[in-house]
Length: 297
Ligand code: 2X7
Ligand code: FE2
Image 1: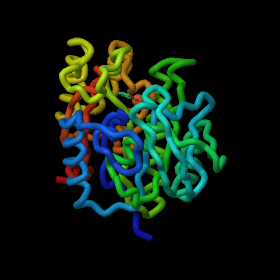
Image 2: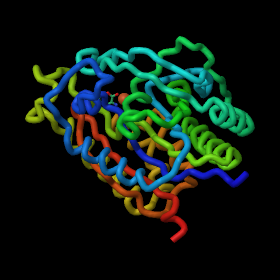
Image 3: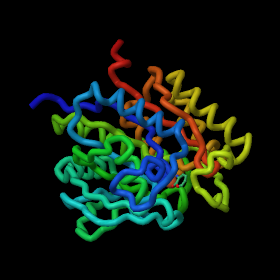
């Protein structure tokens, strides 16, 4: 069996607004468009993936929060309706997805070898979180690839950012090792926004773009600082700054997804490709790809 590999890693944020604005048949709500910059960014990410051959999409998601260890989906098929708890008016999505349970279990076992507390989630009636569904849809609207879905262990809440990062670095290493041993080609998604202070009221028309902007200038400056580090290939510095960034902008990086991705990619020192930056209800969102082939040039 040939060695497996990560063919690409991406920061793939999941505001449900982006799915709503696309009007796919799976979503019950209908929109008049909106958030084009980000949606066109996802188009560019999908274009860059069209040249890649891959077997599976591995998603680390903030909206499956687990407080005792890291959990992995362990059932092959999930089909149900996902309703966003905050935005039921815009996201009521009928999902039908397949899990690569073999790879999921392999990453679980590899993470256990790193000393992490882990669990397979084997309840067939489990409701898949909207982070997984939104990032999964925007990257692969046909849903023709199986996924592996990894929960976010909220160690930041009962310990601190530093401990969360240390664990996510182990989880990233464990993920890379399991992918390589599997012989499979994997696409990895960090499903999170950057800065995350958001508006507390919604415009009458959610997609009214005259109302959309970053919540405050501080968030914008922090987002640009972090994105520029990614563009420059300074991902170790990015990890060092993550606790301060997360605290000052209430960033969704608190869930550990981006730290996991950087570790799985072995802390890229090559340039990331920024496909888009834009805001959704005041939060900062970037769509960014890392192609490990660039490391070899
Ligand atoms: O979960 C989210 C998010 N991360 C960003 C923006 C809007 C809604 O939901
Ligand atoms: Fe979110």
